[in-house]
Length: 173
Image (cartoon, rainbow, N blue to C red):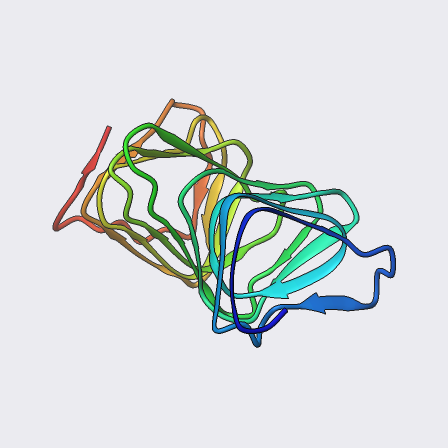
């Protein structure tokens, strides 16, 4: 996929698991509703509303991406040292990492980023506004930095590992 493209929904269903559908050469790729990686590997950098990665499928980043809706991973997510920004408006954005780690994670939305599975960040996490809700899930920072200008919400049973707490701004609730 190359050039400037906008899709309402985009489904990648490539039955050849080792072959990639490559959109890394696209100058501008936007999916207004749902990116669904159903089968195979999709290599991309883009702006998405909702991202859904099915069992046996892979989303591989070739550049930074922005997600304004939910991120649900039942397959594999390969960050390739790229940034994922969640920038949804009011309301909840759900994040199911599916066990895959994130390199750079930014939450700049005005609502809540809600974990629905354990989260591991390996380089940096910036919560620039809104609420980061652990929702009872584990959170691991593996050699990563954390900056918090928003609010981290705890339910009480979370396991948090490797975190150097940002104490000069933001809040914990």
